Image 1 (spheres, rainbow, N blue to C red):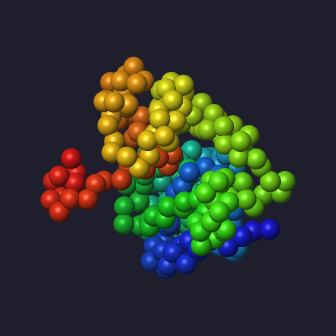
Image 2 (cartoon, rainbow, N blue to C red):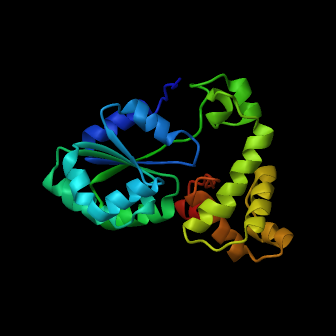
Length: 242
């Protein structure tokens, strides 16, 4: 059973304004399921499937020509696709394309180079209290698999396995060479200190690394939607940025 998401209205609004919409978010927050449910008339291509990746890589122009409405999942796996999308959309402005990505650094960089002004962005987060009972969300977290899947996954087993594969496999595939052990330790420290003022030197001292390295890993966490840094409120914008 597919559960409605409140992001549907925003997705429909962006599709009316842009020929391409980029849907970003952490793995397992339900981007693929949401896109297929919200856009039933779209043809879906998952680039994690080697055959699909090879098909788009070898003859992407033909694939784009064959359908007016397309979903491309894990689009950051094929950077060469973005210049082709720009040319295609300029020639076929009535076509609609939805790109899904679970990590923003490479995806957003390529889009900024190729699709500026042609794509709108939508970040899909975890489940909200408007979509599910708030009490289980506080206890289990906001991943749909922990609430809506059958059989239902146990947070105690599923979350550690998810983090391990994310840190050991997914992040290195994006080109980052950082110790997965250091990332896991920093992520645990961030979880315990969430909501407090960020002190990168203190975090680095506890891990045995300098604050520049901590900042670099935090950039990776933010780019892959594992963490979010909240700027403090100051009336002075300069202070707020610092």
